[in-house]
Amino acid sequence: MFPPEPSACVIWDLDGTLLDTESLVAEVAREVIARHGGELTDAARAASLGKRPLEAWAAVAAALDLPVPAQQLLEESEALLSERWQEAKMLPGALRLLTHLKECGMPMALATSTLRATLPLKLAVHGHLRTTFQITCCGDEVEQGKPAPDSFLVAAKSLGFPPSRCLVIEDSPAGVDAAAAAGMHVVHVPSMVDTGSAARNARTFGRQGITTLASLLDFRPEAFGLPPFKDGVQGTVPVDPAWSIRGTVVRGYGRGSKELGIPTANLDAESLRGSLGEAVTGIYAGWASVGRSSEVYPMCMSVGFNPVFKNKQRVCEPWLLHEFDQDFYGEEIRLLVCAYLRPEADFVSVQALVDRIHEDAAITRRALQDPLFAALKGDAFLAPQEGGTALQPSGP
Image (cartoon, rainbow, N blue to C red):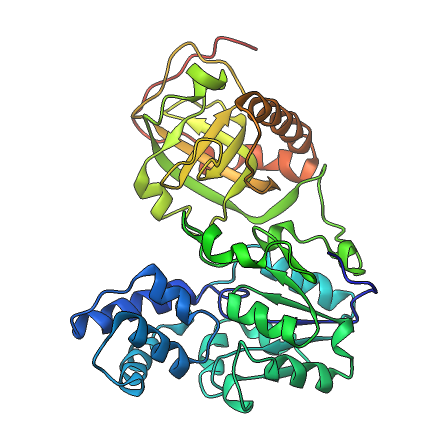
């Protein structure tokens, strides 16, 4: 449900919305919990999302029945995290939207559960964030943390707008509840992208005043009365800078050619953990080359769990839009991803999926003709390496 009147300001969450701190926190939490004979579970992690650090550790300790005070767990984790906050990167689509709103003169605030003393550590390598927000409200500056509405109400009052004119961008259920309790419209961008996240976040779907998006790449400002983006290319969102992905072609589920009539390639798991670690699920476009062939081909790529077939693991399946007279299992594949098309979706039938994949391919071909993307075809990253097989195309 869209807000009844245009948004006058935007209030951002930080962790899991702007910065990918949550994977870092989870890594440290696992280490701390292991010291005390426990193991971090998805349920315990979900219970902690969006809360202030001490309250988050209290939730984890309760969920895991750890015989350790939450304050001790916090102190142990902070000692490790203080040296690593600079590792946290901006999440996909966040910088684009922030820059757009700032250029449009949109008032913005940050309402975070992060403690005031910790905030400079998290923003140390993201200097632009320190000058983007007119107001910053931290978790230890309000009486109650999320899911209470205190931080959002303080931010709105400081910006000078009523709650009904505020748009909140959040990732956690606790943050969504806090913004909703404050009477604000919420864009919910779930941070835990795995096979169980749908169940954890299902309660936000269909709630009045809450719009759920797969990622900020899907954010459309005009839907909330904000100025539209001006950087779209043939209906796609530019990925800037383009992602350079190098991997080995492996055998997948065998569905591409047999069931769909679409000969996709599959990348090895190591490439997914490395180059694609930051990629949100969805459909992308770009350029590809294989083996020691000097040819560069347009490609349309799916990253995700493929809801139609309900995959258990995230996979990357590029479709090189060309016909080859041989397969290239075991060969190196080089992908330069420059555009985002749409979020991953479920379909009522396999044929509906096939039709949409062909539509994605048509969009890809049109978008790659744009000078912005066409220039990337000659990128040095796509040049062949020593060794490999010279593939022979069978079509024009």
